Amino acid sequence: MIVSFSIQNFRSIKDKVTLSFEPDKSDNLAEYYLIDSGAGEKLLKLGLIYGANGSGKTTVLKALDFLRSLVLLPVTQKQEKLNFKPFLFDVETVLQESVFELTFIYNGVKYYYEIGFTTDAVLHEKMNFYSPNKSLVFERTTDTDKQLAFIKFGDKINIKKAQEDALTANTLWNATVFSGFLKSNVDSKELRDATDWFGKVLRNLIEPSTNLTSSISKQLESKSISSKRIIQFLDKADFRISNIHVEKETVPTTEEFRELMQLIVKQVKASAPTIKMDDFTTRDEIHIAFEHEVYHDGKKMFFSLPYKDESEGTQRYFQFSGLLDQMLSHPCVRPIDELEASLHPDLLKHFLLLFLVNVKNSQLIATTHYRELLLEKDILREDIIWFTEKKPDGSMELFSLNEFDSSVVRDTTSIFNAYRSGKLGAVPNLNNYYLESEDGQE
Image (tube, rainbow, N blue to C red):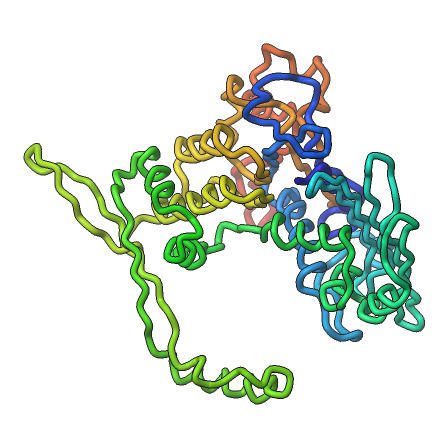
């Protein structure tokens, strides 16, 4: 699970900002909001980020997603650039390094990871672990003139000199030590834990345009997620869906696809001789249909409706139900941008309550404009609420609701009214509705 994540000089973020999942001292709703990290400390399992459009709230999630890509989808050649932008509204930051710091817990061990990089290279990396005292796992530096990485391991890390040399040889100057580890015949518990966490726990960013239908449908067909639970989620949300029908059909691929794969097979034949064109002549399609329970003249009847004919809200909630089942079954960290997209406010609240009541070992990080949730003081902890605001220099500021003193937020204060009125910031500064005419008059 994530303890904290800091970002500096990345997209709209100029100065260092930190998102933390360390709870305050309040016991309010602790059984629903706090999870046992396995390392002797409790962590929050929900973080909600509010802010005006263009204020930078999505950048926090994109930074986490970019870090995941640096580890799991590294560049493969020295001349490749890292695909990101530093803060561009400053002549100095354009030339400076970007820095991420991530503290996370996996298999009962707390890790701290830091990385500094430019579009050309990873300049430095460091990872520590706490057991319980801080110990160095590795420290990496880069000679940018020679385009070479150098790695030094801590005294408590059990790794042989030959393995250290192999890992160094496989770590490109523009890639992380983790990416070098993943393609080396080297074992290290600490590096294995870290790469497993990025691959199995931290999941990719879900945006409003992300269509999860295919992946959720495949997992339903393979029974890696529970159709019984999905039906239960949909039923509790009043969709009147009593069953899900899943069918797999093998269909021929298109001629254009086969031609493309033929070119690819020719290129990779030497490194993967077992690949054959026969593998690409057909593909599997998963078809989903929902069985709806309706009443005619007092009689219960069932009608099947193809998934594509369902409303966008039904489709979105089906996809979120699949995510919820995953979070119930496997500990994970789920970043979601614009959580409320295509969902009725009551459905969104219902989804969050299902998550809080049932999920025990996963975290959800989401941006949202659903400010009505701030009315629900009886189901809300203040330490899970964050705000983003654009500063005069165009950079983003990230701050927690907990940072406001009692002069702004009291126990009797309506957080919703305080936010809506602008007392908490993070709202658009709108002007009047009148346009200037061509002669400069309104």
